[in-house]
Image 1: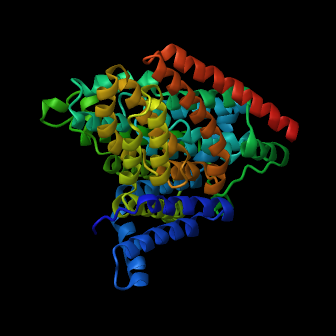
Image 2: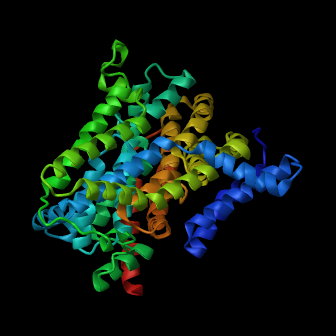
Image 3: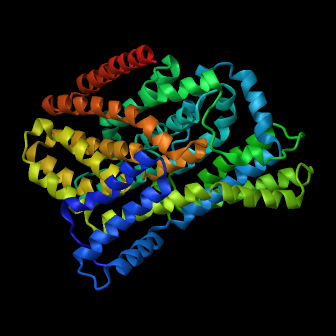
Length: 510
């Protein structure tokens, strides 16, 4: 289908979907209405003969074309793995073991954040694995599922975008290579890390929340309800259906999960050519840069499921029938998350492929690119965040903006190329982090067993605070030719003061 330039109307679908989701607390119909509004604009703009029929036809054909079946398979297989581990009694046994060693809410949250920061290879893998491992622990200490989802989401994309060896680094590197402006794409990426203020401050925010319990706004209410009423906001109905084995041990959870991590790493290296004949990919950085994350995660989750099969069946923790029934139930449990992913990919496709939202945002950027150079990094951050929030994709955002930002910054002030490039990446992560239609936001909700709309609403305030402090940092960097200590230091201090103020205010209003 040919694209139609819809101008400002191109942002109507995501804005409408987000507003409806926040008002109705129901995400499926909100996303579907957003998609249909976009295809209606497209049908009218393209002068379709049968507008109503064309609206429906284009909506569902777009969803079908945008589905990433590898991610759907990965989510489904991981759901199956989680369910059979629970059936075998592994989750319960691990929870009992972990709570004897993790002795407080603070240490439970720190362990969650630390695990999230350690799994930096891929954000999808991060979101679902951390939730699976830490849910029994956080539930035991009455940590709300909204808080768990926030900790998962805030250590997924933010850590991946500043990890030199990750699927995100590979995506950025490919875009940098396309500009032809850098001698070494890897060196250019590494140079952006100190200036990626949003990613760094998002991780600092996680540390502050874990250490000082500095909650505020909707998250403060969710945590208070969890502590006082014991209602963590669990949306997972599996606990009412499980007849778990009483003979399971913590190793019945740890062995399959560790296998998943090992298989994922090996599969990523394999798909990247590390074990192949081409010597160009015989280094970790080159192999991860050339890997295919989707298929690799499918292979890894299937391998981990097979490990669980041979771990549980011979020991008669589960019968063959019970194991296969558990696989089916686990896939069913992931159905809501998979549906949201399909709808989110659909609305992203409508914006990017049909209504030319990126072109509209690009025109805004080019119109103002001659503004005072000192404000340019902050302006780029805001534009990137807006585009990523609207389309639900960080990769698509920096893929669009990097080829624009690099030549503009080189022409105006070459000393700020790295800062402008970093602000592009940071803004892309910001929008992706807080967008209700972002796949990582959806997977964080699924991994935590948290209502998706609640996750979005409780996390949004935290993300906006970090973004505001990042903007201040980029303004300072723009006027000091990239003085990282002054700009990042100011943003860091401002973040701490703001969080403390908002926490005390929430306490007074409670």
